[in-house]
Structure formats: C-alpha cells, structure tokens
Length: 228
Image 1 (cartoon, rainbow, N blue to C red):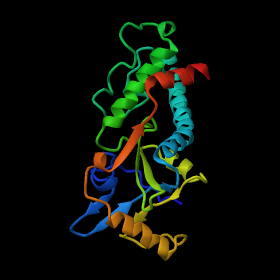
Image 2 (cartoon, rainbow, N blue to C red):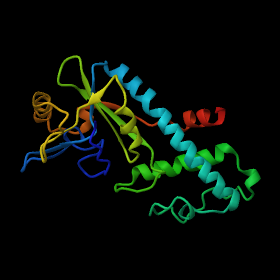
Image 3 (cartoon, one colour):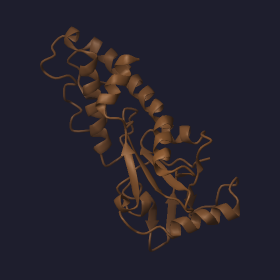
C-alpha cells in the first residue's frame, strides 16, 4: 500500500530534481512516497493511468461544479472567497465575467470555464491550498529498475488519485524512504531493490528523467460534463 504524503514542497513536485524525491545530499535522505511500478510500456502505462484516474478527476470536477452552481443560483455576483476561498489574489474577484448580470444568462460552458480557470490558478500556487477545488494533476513516468518496467507518480493535492491507483492490479506500490523503518508488508529484498533504484537515480531535473502528462484540457472537460 502506498504511503500517502500529498504535501507539496520544493522537493516533491513534478518540476524538482532527482525524480521529485526529497534527497538531501548532506544526510542522504530519500523520501519517495506514492510511486508505483508496472511492467507496461510507457504509452500503455500512460493510457492505464488516464483510464484509472480521469474518472476520479471528472467526478471531483462535477462535484465542485454543482457547488458552484448552487452558489451562483443564490448570488450571480458571488466572489470566489464566499465559497471557494484559497487565500489567492483572486479570492475577492467576481466568479463570472461582468457581461453576465443574470443567472439565466449563465450557461454551463460559462461555469465550467470559470471553475477550470480557478483550478488552473490553484495548481500554479507554490504552497498547499488546502481546498477540495485543487484537483489538477501532473503524472510523470520514469525508467524502472528493470528493462521491462516503468515507475510513475501522480502529483496532486487530491489524494484520491493515489488511493485509486493503489487498488489496481496492473501496477503496485514502489514507494521508498530511509528516514524510518520499511513497511512490514515489504520484504527486505524488495526494499533493497527500491533503495538501489533511488540511489542510482541521477541528480537531474525531472524534465531529463521522465515523460508526463497533465489533467484533461478544458475542451475535454466540457464535452464530458455537458454530455453526461
């Protein structure tokens, strides 16, 4: 089972060094939480990751869209801080564009557009937002310890992606840390295999170690939600 640590920091992001793993060279500390391994090819793994987590993404987006709709039905002039507070510069801004003065003028597309832009702003925030609206993600795929394996991780403030991946039979947990004892359900041999993998990881930017993709674009979200 993956040991979930979803706090974002300057080490554990899709743009950090050494595979997004917290690795302090002075103390040789490695904390590689929520990583998975599979024997699928890179493209097949990417497809399976999308198939697994995008339904979770769409459900979460739909839930936030329903909340947004309720708020706008009450007050078409609502601002973000009244319902979706996240301590961002735009918190006190009006949710809908100025051209919409009556809720009957607001289409589903307008609401999806506004919510998607809000989520985009949350994703760019360098610190934890502590809001269920922050559901965007980055997925990265790296070479695995063996020729026929890849290692991957989904970075997000939403823990549901990792929790869902943890239930799949096509991938398995590949987390590793050396600051505390290993998980009881991981053998010493497997733990050493993971340790060797992270010890051999080049200290390079993520862009040189992996390929990846992000959450569905707004066009895909719009099609999915308006047809459902």
